[in-house]
Length: 124
Image 1 (cartoon, helix red, strand yellow):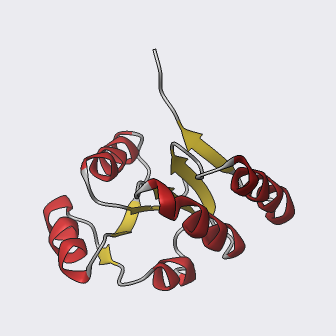
Image 2 (cartoon, one colour):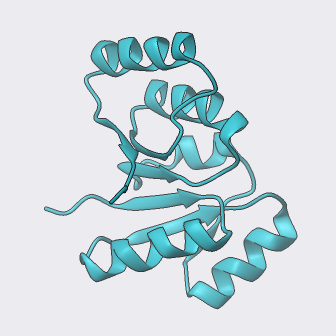
């Protein structure tokens, strides 16, 4: 059974994640952008069924198993920790956090929750 995904951040990278998930056959349930207007417009153009209005709404969606975080760096720690606590697996764009102390806390939270945490990093 494939997991259901959602994406936070609807700029170039977020849209690339939606495309990549689709190519892998992973259903993308919806997305969350920086405002209601940008979220609605992006979800319509990407043909996504749900435009979330808040991180809390996304975290509460029981149909979503994994969330891809494609937002500005300073938001990663808060979003990842909240989603992990809500029972979601998380794939976060690099950098994971703004400093090693926050990264250490997320690693501990992954262990505590038993969820999968990953960082999207590609360098040749």
